[in-house]
Length: 173
Image 1 (cartoon, rainbow, N blue to C red):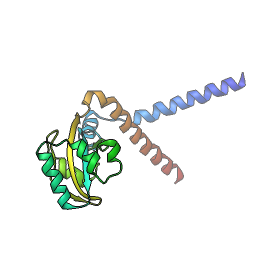
Image 2 (image 1 turned 45 degrees about the vertical axis):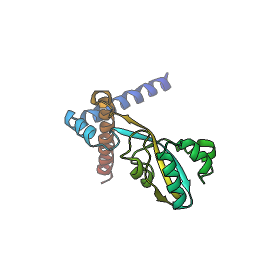
Image 3 (image 1 turned 90 degrees about the vertical axis):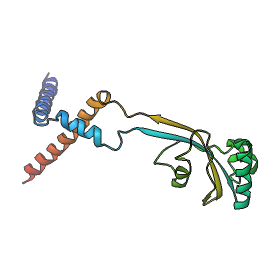
Image 4 (image 1 turned 60 degrees about the horizontal axis):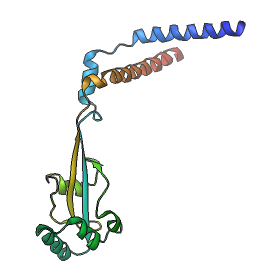
């Protein structure tokens, strides 16, 4: 009985402290909107699927680019001619990546291309590369009403943490 009473008292104390502190922590609608509009993680995201052919010499790259412009299949040439060892298995396909988080040289080469477009020759660490934009997928920014409560909780937790740290510092004095 005594143990149960002690657990009950602890719970009541915790709830009282939680309620007391939460009353001191308010987050306004304006703060939530500001966070939504300025947080770099809450944004439209663009994903790129790219293929590449890498060769050692500029002349070979020019020959391949000419063949591509005449209608040769990119995947076929990537498999047959690329010095990238994985190209034999992937036909030159690279992993899907988020724009802004991939290799700059690749992004610069394909950023203005339409789906299926072929880049000019790009000098890279591995040799001379030709890129093809296989696809571009855009994930829209999460609607405000869908994420509002999550932002509210996050901001409350941040303010709560700051308040508790401040209270602890005051108690230490």
